[in-house]
Image (cartoon, rainbow, N blue to C red; front, side, top):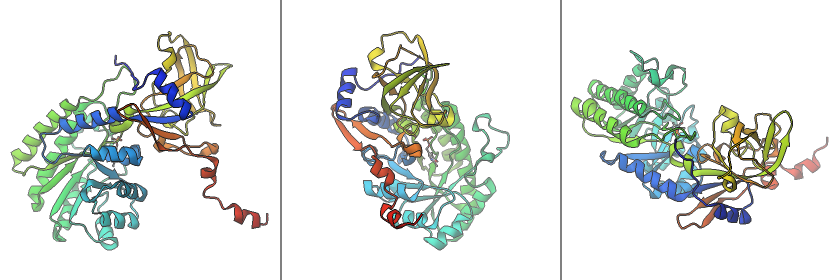
Length: 421
Ligand SMILES: *Cc1c(COP(=O)(O)O)cnc(C)c1O
């Protein structure tokens, strides 16, 4: 069983809370950088390998800047994400634009930035051409649908709204070739939070085989294959992280057999992971407000599902540590709640913890992806600050917490005064 560890001591985090009141998200720079280097070195055999960080996982420009410094590109799926990537200094093909049901202005901006544009549907070929003009390079997103022969772990892509069918792919590349496009990519993304390395190897085999077939039949060659994101993280202490070396080795032999072996020239492998890049290195730090004992025992925190929605949204497990009580037995069972007026505002249900008391500091693990990013203001709950624990132990506030003024920012109280009820 893997141990869930913290990148700070009790004294350190108590000191941080003196300057930055709870709740806040804190990210571990050292963990993020080391993990980024592990991912890149696992695929170092592939010249041109690149990971495009899925910005939606944690859209903070400071973290994006760190990741760019580690050689990552940025994977964006909306206009604000594109603008954020631009503000951080990402340029040209260091930006991947993977969207769906895409509005024209987003294609215009992506094209202007020189981003790699990944099309979700065959109808977007003429749409992109008419609104922004076709770029020099185009990538198409494949949806494997009900794969012939079946692939148990790929699930049911035919229920997913994303991507081209197999026939549409051949047709799409033909159309693009006829329009004079010479640089091509192929993409798929059909998994989320997957921990089985074989899953990614199977996906690579499908993509490489398909790319070789399209290349031969349509008479093009591929510059890159984007295997998407979806590498999972061990939210539960008994789970293991994905063995990146195993994924890389399997992808490499598929690459050699199905691409090089079929006469296709070498190509670049891209990933667009989000969760595994920042997820394990972000922590929601909160304090116990109240202990309540009714039909169940409740620990009421000063954070709520507006700070971390995954448990309420998916019933997701997030490990909870109580740094001051690590040596005490987890002999009490609690629901750990926030203060939002929805009964699913619970970080944990029936969780065994040490005997808890008001004022205890609580750390919720694996909140670095889809944590702060999924925040919202329903019920007048305000999004918390984000802090970065730097490698030298110093702390930088990388986003301030919201105030009621932020909550009111889209309202015009001047016009309200003149409004006759
Ligand atoms: C969400 C998403 C990702 C990142 O997924 P993770 O599970 O965070 O790795 C990558 N690509 C696309 C198109 C996505 O929608």
